Image 1 (cartoon, helix red, strand yellow):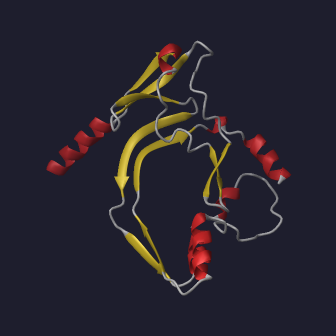
Image 2 (tube, rainbow, N blue to C red):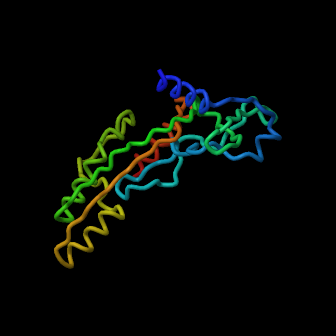
Image 3 (cartoon, rainbow, N blue to C red):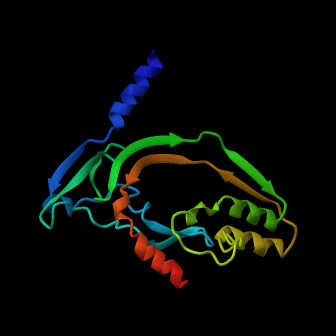
Length: 190
């Protein structure tokens, strides 16, 4: 019925149109939103991005120096943007979680426990790096953990957490662009 027609019209409106363009036009255009998120490392102790890239996030030309690049029509921002060479299936995919969740914590340790439980240990899978000890460190140096610890030392506080999330784009990373050997060497040095 009407909901099917509305859904189909939204899908058609937000479907990306792709162009292959010469290098001269690509240089002046911005990358699609989130182009570097897949390749940037994440510090699970501080719960923030590390600034170290384990995937090539800058190469956007294919076919050599004077080759072509892929441009996407971003209908949310109403502009053309370039796609890096290692990304496929970039799509506009707007999804918002309409429920607002709230949690109340009575202590800094409960805030910390919930922060660390949100990080799972599956980030180690496939790295073939021997683990010295199984220490729970995820999130212990995050801004949230430091804030909770500083207040709990002063007096009795209750902490609340509210979250609302939206996803606007989706993409897929080609496996061949992952610098796995470089990442493994770096982890072994630590």
